[in-house]
Length: 178
Image 1 (cartoon, one colour):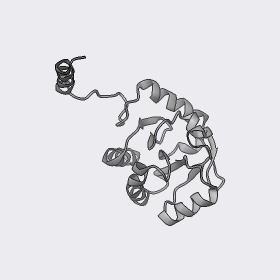
Image 2 (cartoon, rainbow, N blue to C red):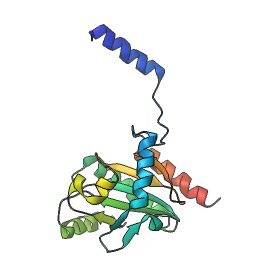
Image 3 (tube, rainbow, N blue to C red):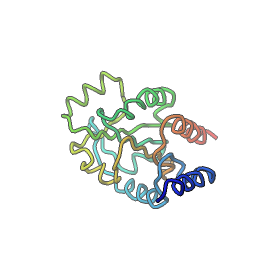
């Protein structure tokens, strides 16, 4: 492709505006990915660091953020203060974060790190990074990856981060009280 043709293609794309995904997230995933996430959620069966079993039934009844992350992921660490603020703002009856750490470190090392950071929400930790069972179930191929679940257990959005994630969580929690 010639340089002038490439510039014309880029200019046309920019003029057309952003492509809006049917998924409310900032992610480029399709409706098929939203459906795949819903099917994965229905098959969720994992234990967090305290031994609590997490299945689809435990996710229903409140807004839940499934947050796939790792201590080596810089964008994940950037999101940590916002997640702590969200956790502090909303009651656990209305909102929960379920972290899924893709760290390959030992359980002890991860728990110590979480304690130092005061990240007090449940964490699933299955060694194996992207090959860990829960990461494979949800087809996680990059970090951070978020899946926001409505209180009725349906998937609301994929890939939200930052202010968009915060605003969507506030809106979903507010819906619970209408």
